[in-house]
Figure 1 (tube, one colour):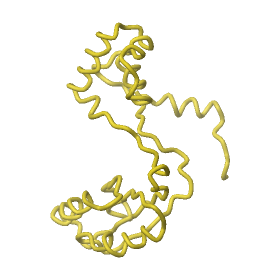
Figure 2 (figure 1 turned 180 degrees about the vertical axis):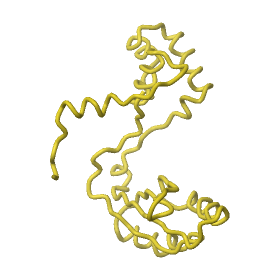
Figure 3 (figure 1 turned 135 degrees about the vertical axis):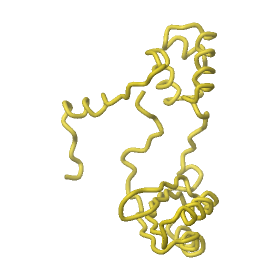
Figure 4 (figure 1 turned 135 degrees about the horizontal axis):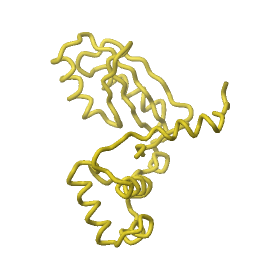
Length: 173
């Protein structure tokens, strides 16, 4: 099944799953999509894309920020260019499932070097950590010195990412 493609009729249906968002019109959606693609684009270029004046675009963007649709604007740095090419997913099982143990783990995970994401999940694991590192040796050191020493950790399972098939921050708007 490796290398299989989704028939075009199904692929189109997958991409059509855009949620209904109250308070956003077609122009707001186009602005959000364009900003997710390149937040560094000028207001003049955005204005051309959505057929508004640059002033109107600026007002809309400020409103979208004020209303919480845009949380912040960031630059996406290429991990390979800064010598962090290895992505590791770590499943974590805690020794207790209590609010205090979750809070202690989460507070400590926020300070874990290279930790990009920490998700509380349902199922076999309590948390998944997404970690960027230089190489397997550096991850092994981080695992032995920090990850297994996080509060409440009973067990971990490590998954080294071989190929990032889909990696995006863009949400369907």
